[in-house]
Length: 505
Image (tube, rainbow, N blue to C red; front, side):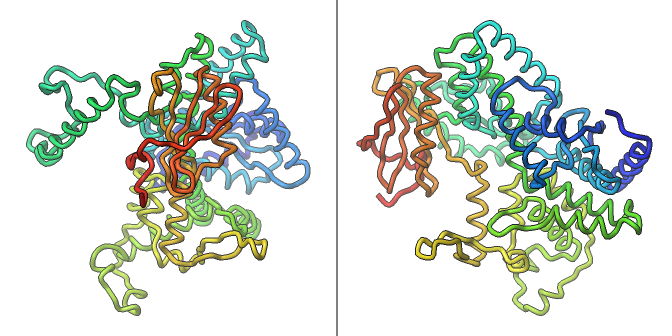
């Protein structure tokens, strides 16, 4: 449904203000929907048309109940697309619509300019509709139950991709890039006069030696080295029928489209909240709307015990960066200052805040954002802490307020979006055609139930026994699913540091 005349006027004003403050976004199309259609679109991951699957119906039912019982309400949905599509809830008041529009323009600017979104499909709205048509055709040909069961397996492993691989596309090695051994490490692009510094010969020689050893050790093994993009490996090597291969390819494409949203949740929501706050309070807010705006905005950034609010965390960090770079509270001179009073009153009046946050918005993801800009002063000011469950008391308690502990816990929860690192290690394990996966241990053991479910799903594609090598209580074990039963055995192979991380053994 198109916007009424009043909202068209508001949209034009908010858009003009957003562009005037420096936001650079895709052309944005707003559509008005009722709560049922909003929930339907949200259950499809923000898209108005996707292939049918029971998971989407479950999500729709959950959202609908939450709305009916007053437990949740979706104010807006926005799609990373060109043009960008956003949906407004028809029962929202004018103030909410205005605030949501400002928020949407912040998201659209982030989608367009953040580096981690640069490889996403900007025509995904059309692609999702195409996927829906193909899946429904396969359902007609092969039966809905069989296709839906295959989709279940696909969904259960849809996160087994390598989000960074989009930035390192495979390329053919030309003759002049090949050494006498047929091995040449990749080189970073550089001008001729800078090449010796960007690609030092000592480093290239060490990499040639490493690649040569790996080639000798692989002895024709597939893959020659561990592969993180398990979906791509299954597409290429698993004994799939044509329609199964096509559906798995669709799931993989959608996973790569959604991956940057998981990698930048704090930044993306923080950026949109920063700009809706600035646009509303400085340009678009009328006196009569002040109290209602404060009430609604405070709800957006409200905190709940034991839960991280990405809107608040991102907003506070962007504001902190702007403040620090405006006053010059960064760099060697500031860090070296040991006078607490002087440091607290430090102000070089540089005015670099806005320039810096636009730079941050362009380059970083959540992990690098937190790693680079989370400071001890910020943690102390915002009372951040690490909590843990006390079994004796039967409740969660504050475990530490130490800055290093807080930062480590945040980074740990954000790295790989909080999921374990799983690789394909050998597609012909022990020369029996079995698939060996490996878990890179990062300090926490795998959840046994989740690991078993993953092996069952991968077996659906591989159709032969699937194994998973991991650490449990510091010891190497291999979990196996043979198509019928799960089993576990000790691993007599040496623990590989490059896969598991260093151990005390």
